[in-house]
Image 1 (cartoon, rainbow, N blue to C red):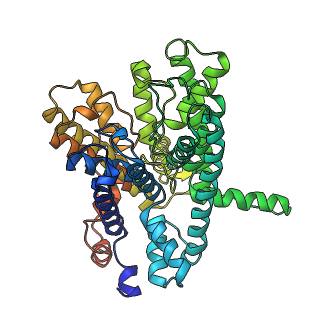
Image 2 (cartoon, one colour):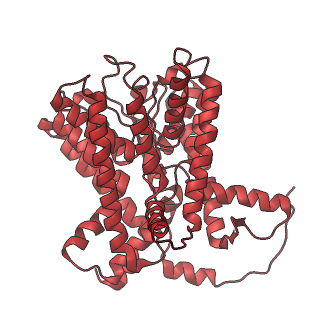
Length: 450
């Protein structure tokens, strides 16, 4: 494929095709005899590969059914899903050849980078900071769990836990039945896991600017953060503080009642960071109150920062929607965020993302209610939201899913991971046709809204 045709190829189709191929390869590897300890139905293998690739963490089978090789395959799928297959592909290509304009343009579209000339450096930075952070996290995690497992087990579990936390997958291999309080009472493990989850949810572009800011301070130069990084930093900090306080208030006398004051704060912080996309909980989900579950669903729907390993509608879309509401109430014609006017096309995209996401959840829930007549509405609603937002938490519904329900949940995980708008754009008409249609100007007319 030439650079010219590659530059105009739909990024949505590239992402969708990449996810599909990754899931299929993962399924084939998991189906091999050396990956399983017991026979597993094909649909459950596809479901497992989909959940790992979409960094969700919902499984219809117990992961103990897989060997070390099988769990290593899951680890690879989580890493690929967290970073993105296009990012990894362009990185590998950049090691052996110069990237052509078409490849740089495609990678820039996929990662939403405006300056494509720096794509190679940005991707190398993303891979480097990911591996370094995960390695440091694995080393610290090893010393936190060393007393619970043998050295071989602790080494593998530490690496798996670190990658899963940074990629916001929320997949845990710890034996919670044998060590029920290993996470909630292990404060060093709580802190390092919280830090890994937060780093992964912040966004790679933001980390590039944070490092640039530190260098500027050391060199006594001025540095201005971009709007996307301001949204990521302010939004992540604000939501984390609010979620921590609410968790502390709601569960202090319930799920956290047996903990010390410091333990309640650390566990509230851990769960506050986790519920935005990761799905790791320090306490059983069945111990939480219904208001906490509702709050978790809202936070998971908002999700992590743009360009991060997390999911959800992402912070920029949430910020823009809030600004649209503010502008409508205030009577402003434009949408402004932190002294910057947001482009009209991005406002429309943000509204579309939120609307399509809500619509997808409603439609998926509707079909699940038809196919799962033996499950309560609340449990199905939470399962649907958890799948679409890639949160990966369940109220015990996943193992009860019928064949058709498993398909709906898998589609929801894929749609949530690549984005509902991206999924729609993958099937739309070509850019040339869209640009031609956009040149048609119709007469303006106002309609009654209420």
